[in-house]
Amino acid sequence: MKIVVLEGSPNKNGSSNMLADSFIRGAKEAGHSVQVIDAAHANVHPCIGCIRCGYEGPCVQKDDMESIRPAILDADMMVFVTPLYYYGMSAQLKTLIDRFCAFNSSIQRKRMKSALLTVAWNSDNWTFDALEAHYKTLVRYLDLKDQGMVLGRGCGTTSMTKHSGYPEKAYELGLSV
Ligand SMILES: Cc1cc2nc3c(=O)[nH]c(=O)nc-3n(C[C@H](O)[C@H](O)[C@H](O)COP(=O)(O)O)c2cc1C
View: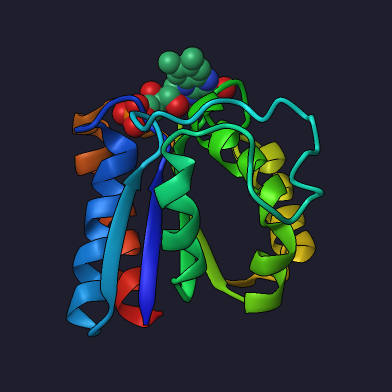
């Protein structure tokens, strides 16, 4: 299976990408091919809501989405990777997801698999309630098949994350998909 990993953290060597790296290691061991899309550093502009795409067509904005769109549509699975920012996903990842507007039906038709990998400073049991609800709503709306979530509580620094069980959980998820 072809997997695209959408990385939404501005910290290339941060905690979110630590989970992504572990997931990728597991997924490759399981025989999958993986393409990483660094959404946080890509040249992707916010959707301007013009609807010139008609919700399924070429976007008026000519930026890195021109290569990201075919990469996503060529894949069987999407993995969303993000730090928790004010109890939601990062603006960087959300900006990319909003651009799905121009190929929404194509994504829905594919019935892709998906997963969520995320980290946060807080460790309260409600830390990921809002992000989890958002992810599950995206799964429902985009007709995705959820393969699992790794919700890294108490992962405020790379050292905290490294010493938590979450990288291992991400590895196991990668191995299992
Ligand atoms: C702008 C911003 C907002 C944040 N919001 C939250 C939050 O709402 N809850 C929380 O627990 N941690 C929050 N954090 C902490 C990060 O989620 C946490 O440090 C995470 O490990 C960063 O991941 P990274 O290394 O991939 O950047 C925030 C950090 C930043 C920079």
